[in-house]
Image (cartoon, rainbow, N blue to C red; front, side):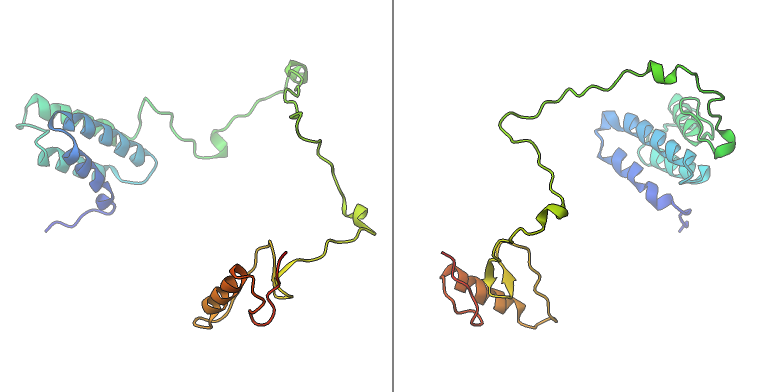
Length: 197
């Protein structure tokens, strides 16, 4: 049994997609997947050999290449050669760093004058009061609201709470008892369940 080249298993989707396509659409699906594989090659994910081997395997498995020397085989060979070509005229070649980049040599003096001033085109909704900013300095001397508790000094009301313990420590049973007590407006949960008005 032939050993798959590194990465060839990642291209198995090509054969699967061609197999799922309707008989009249298999060739167009093959061409699309070959183009995608070529893009992956140019990004460095695969080697040309791996892609060529996989594409020829798919073409032969689905009878897309036809008889040796036929127009169908020449067409498939052209599609595969375009996919494995290192340079593609349709796509710009990726730059390899700072040496390839050339920034502007000078900034025109009128650069700021060319910009249009930014205008605020949004209006606040009329039914909402304007935003009032409050700083911590303004809190000095202000009484805090009385703390509301679900379980006195254990679980605050209307707030997020964490109950943690080792596994099988009884967290679930404790919470079920507390929720049942809260639903029944009972003060019987570890002796500390508050009654709400």
